[in-house]
Length: 61
Image (cartoon, rainbow, N blue to C red; front, top):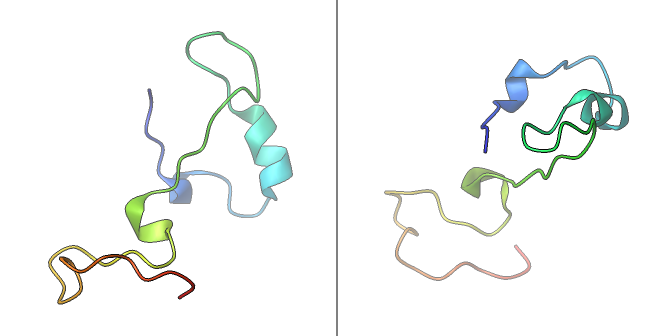
C-alpha cells in the first residue's frame, strides 16, 4: 500500500483524468487504485483530541 497526499496530485485537473494516471504497485495496471478517505474527510467524524472525540459519530451531520 502506498499513501499519497491529495495535495501532491495535480490540482488543476479533474479526478477523472488524474485517477487513470495512477498505476497499481501490485498489478501494474493504470487506474487500478482504491482510494480510501482519511478520517478527517468523512462527514460526522470527530476530530481527535477534541471534545467530541469520545462520543459516537453523528449521523446526517
